[in-house]
Structure formats: structure tokens, C-alpha cells
Amino acid sequence: MTSKPIHSTRPLTRISMSLPEELLEELDKLVGKRTFPSRSHAISIMLSDYLVRAEHDNSDEVRFGTITLFYYNNVFDLPRQLAETQYRYIDEVISSLHVQLIHNQTIEVILVQGPAGKLHTITAELTKMRGVIYSKLQLVGSIIPPLHPLSSNEEPERAPASPLR
Image (cartoon, rainbow, N blue to C red; front, side, top):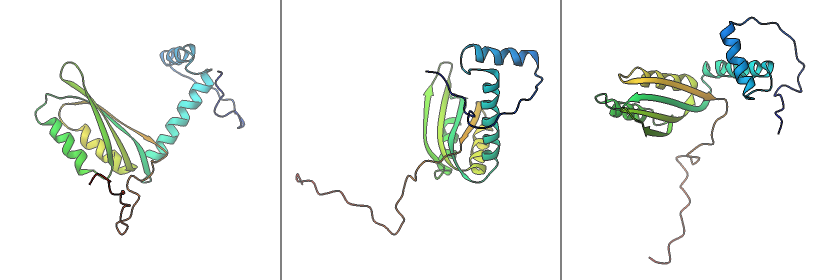
């Protein structure tokens, strides 16, 4: 299976670019591992990703994504603070998964949806907690279907009565 360039149907413009030698070596390693078919394709994909994130991350449009946290779980009260913060933003926090690692470390991935600005606020609150080693908000331009499609005036459809009652 060959990879088809994403921008194959659009006109291309040739540019010249200067990079530090170490960065070029890393780029060539990615291309050499066949992660990308060429330097141009790799740079195009990375630049597109950056531009989409910059546009979406700075808007208040509803976005979908993840907050990834890496933290020490033995820091006093940190797990409770993380849980309380997620509860405070219950409209934006859809789900979370945490995995206990060695050396009292935990990785947690939080699935979120909401206005990009609010998702940045949530990430900042979680990041500043003592014991958090690393955090990253990754937003995607699309959104998931509503989790609760019924309005408050509609009643949910009732399941048929069980014959065993």
C-alpha cells in the first residue's frame, strides 16, 4: 500500500527552507523510517497540523480532544484535586482513563469536548497542580455527537416491561 500525498489535487509551490542541521537529521530519520514518503510531505503534514491547531485552539468553537497528564500519584491530595477539577467541568469532561505506572507515577488521558478556550482553562488548572510532571491538550477540529440528545421537555423512551415481573 503506497501513501498518497494529502495535497496531491492542489497546486504546489516550491520554497527554499533553512533548518538547523540537527533538526534536518531528525526529519531525515522520520522519512527514512517511512513515516513520510518525503521531506516535503513531512513538512507539509506538520505545518498543516500546526495551522489547524493554532486556528482551532484560539477559537471558542466547540472542539473535541484529549488532555494527557503524567503525574506522581503519591503527592498529597493530588488524585482528589484532579478528580474534583474534572467534576467541576463535568459538562466538558466526557471520560478519563488512568494507568498506574512504576515509581508512583500515573498517566491519565481525559476525553473532553467544549469551547476551546474552556478546554485550555481546564488544562491549565490541572497542569499547575503540584505533582503534575507533564500535560498536553490535543484538540481535533471535529466534535462527537451529543451525549444527551433529549431536551429537558422530552421524556426518554421507556423499555418494554419484562415478562418476569
